[in-house]
Image 1 (cartoon, rainbow over the protein chains, first blue to last red):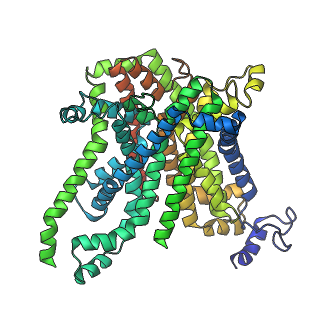
Image 2 (cartoon, rainbow over the protein chains, first blue to last red):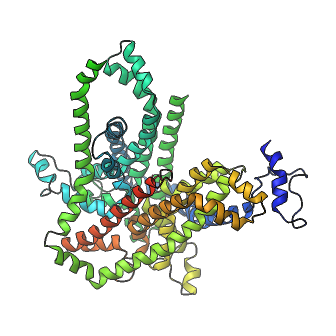
Amino acid sequence: MVAASTVSIARAAEPAGQHPPPVYRRRLWPWPGPLPGFGLSLGVALLWLGLIVLLPLSALAARPWTLGFQGVLDSLSDPRVLAALRLSFLSALAAAAVNVPIGLLLAWVMVRENFPGRRWLDAAIDLPFALPTAVAGLALTALYAPNGWLGAPLAAAGLKVAYTPLGIGVAMLFVGLPFVVRSVEPVLRDLPREAEEAAATLGADGVQTWWRVILPALLPALLAGFAMAFARAVGEYGSVIFIAGNRPMVSEIAPLLIVVRLEQFDYAGASAVGLAMLVLAFMILLALNLLQRRNRG
Amino acid sequence: MRRRRDGNRFLRLAVLLLAVALTCIILLLPLAAVFTEALRRGIPVALQALADPDALAAIRLTLLVAAIAVPVNMVGGIAAAWCIAKFEFPGRRFLLALIELPFSVSPVISGLVWVLLFGAHGWFGEWLQERDIQIIFALPGLVLATIFVTFPFVARTLVPLMQEQGRGAEEAAATLGAGGWQIFRRVTLPDIRWALLSGVLLCNARAMGEFGAVSVVSGHIRGETNTMPLHVEILYNEYQFVAAFAVAALLALLALVTLGAKALLERHGSSRASLL
């Protein structure tokens, strides 16, 4: 209906005779719309996408197989690779899981409470997005090193953070936190307070209202935030390598192993790890996406 | 009802304090640490570290890389946003998903893919070597890796806004006889300029701060292929902590300026730009 009413607009826009009338013939392709510039903008976008994203990623997808199928399996079943992948994925999942309650708390306070400095809190939450990862890595290392502001008291309590897998988790926590807050915040803002009030009138106490009314409504957003925080954390490099200590088999993350293999000019081995990371991450994200849909439906 | 709320007051205050405490520990302490460490031996020493020739070269290179990468992504991003938001065609969502793909790729992989294409043993490696063209371990590699990493920012900020605005105004302009460029300049651009600026700002912050992708393709040649974040790493590994933190503090300032400008732009009435 829209298309029919805009036919005349399109014809008026084009000087007579330059183009054949656009709609009267049956088209193989649906008519994109009356505005000019479709071909040009789509062309530029596809060229840009193809050259910058798709061509390089296809090189990543193709390269490992120069080793042959068995070669890829052998390359990936190296204990050092398995340890790095396990470390990266488990720490990223753990960090994202810890980020869910913290992010929910921050989002809750920002939406429901009015206090001086709310704007500052709002800006501070975006800090991990804006702060270059190397700077974050340096800062966290200084903070959690055995003589650091937080590292010293933690060390006194017997907890070593910097240069251990725990430090990797701390860095991943930092980079992932805003994803959860920013994903939950809009949903929480749109959540009708009437539902909570109704629950209260029906005799629900605070805990019941939380479990039965608020959390179910926020669950899809929490899952989405978890997924984004995980995706960011699993590939994170800059903020992790400073604090990790980078000992093979103990605190060496998968992205670092890619760098190590590249430095040995083992292109195929490096891209095998890279491809494995991408495939694993997409599988986890797909599973989370399905879970999210089931909860929404 | 009234009493109920008073009863919750203590709990609410506790929740608020907990949130503030967590924000301070997780987010603000690292920032404070950067500036404290940078100024540990006073401002002159920190400034001296920034005036070092290698540091200056790194700053220049960072600015140059961003100056090339950001406009490329701006043009591509506007084109993509225009065709996704103003037209209807099959595969629109798929196109948007592909554009957002670089966000879910590890920075190291974003650098690795260029080595696979243009490195000595890459697809085009031999061809380039015969012609004596250096891409990896040189400026073009740094630019390509940066473009890849900052690819989605502009399109991602523009698409939701332009979809929300619809195409009524543009169609009216077309009826009145405006051409494509005229419509874009006079009708669309004024509507999206704040969002565009916001997207460009975020793209620029990431371009200047990128570490992983750039680290893979740089080769770490001091004074030549070291951007600021890479220079920070080199200084840190050489135990020149004050100098490392001084350059890091400069990068942190860039992040703070970006956040401040973004907050200002949001107040300007443009829709909320997403850093995600």
